[in-house]
Image 1 (cartoon, rainbow, N blue to C red):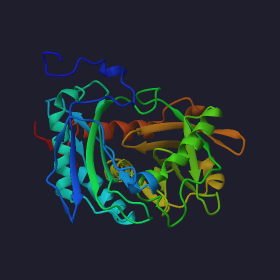
Image 2 (tube, helix red, strand yellow):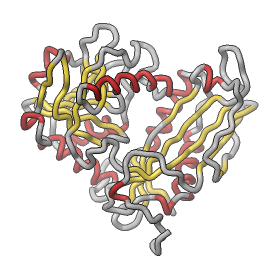
Image 3 (cartoon, one colour):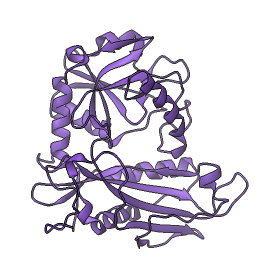
Image 4 (cartoon, rainbow, N blue to C red):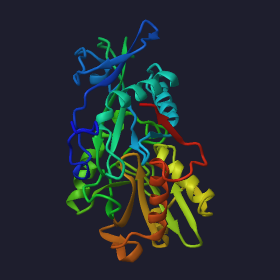
Length: 347
């Protein structure tokens, strides 16, 4: 550890990978109540072989980040929305909701206990926070678990895409369905993601960074990428985003749409987007989420050829650049928080 109390890491070279930190927070639900929870230094979860999390995917997770401000404050971005989303997911998966107070306390304690792992201001890195809820009680039949663990793990990370910074990515439309209408696509269930490993592998074979999904019913309407929501800039100062019951409601996406409307004066709309009919009207495209932040999309593979956007798919457009800058400035305390989105963690 260095004199400034930080770990001796090359922060600027970090990728989006797991790094073991000192502590994680854990609370147990059994007999109808949650424990107070406490910190543990073990990264190993001991789980019964009959746990529904293993057999029936009764588990879910969240993702958020802690940033260091220039004045040294440690900032979270809208963590109450992550608590709310996990509660909605838990209800869908027949798990006990983690109370908001417990969720926020677990996140704060995990961040506080791993202060030396929070990347310094200006490093381009952040402390990724992964709350998870899993069914751990012994079971065999298809029924809810008898007990559950709520755990908050953290890890310092760099950009999600290895290109780093605000660099262009590409997406390839997949013929695989991410989620069915009225299924679990709108909640952050772990079971939503394994199919994406195959779809993204196929996308990478085409030269893309990740898969892009259309609706499962007609394979016509744009939904989301494997790890991010989609936003699109059009002519006449418009910013649109797909509307579907199978899309995960991204905290980042919602925030960007608010910034675009209230601070940039853009005309924003969440609606069904017929990809083949409208792709020629896309001036700029972005993939956004906690991990991806906002990654401009230079091109999309659709119907056996590439469709390119701003600057022939080789330049970051002005809309995505401005939205990225404004979002990052908010998250690290460089911009006035007129929306009251920032949550400071006292160290």
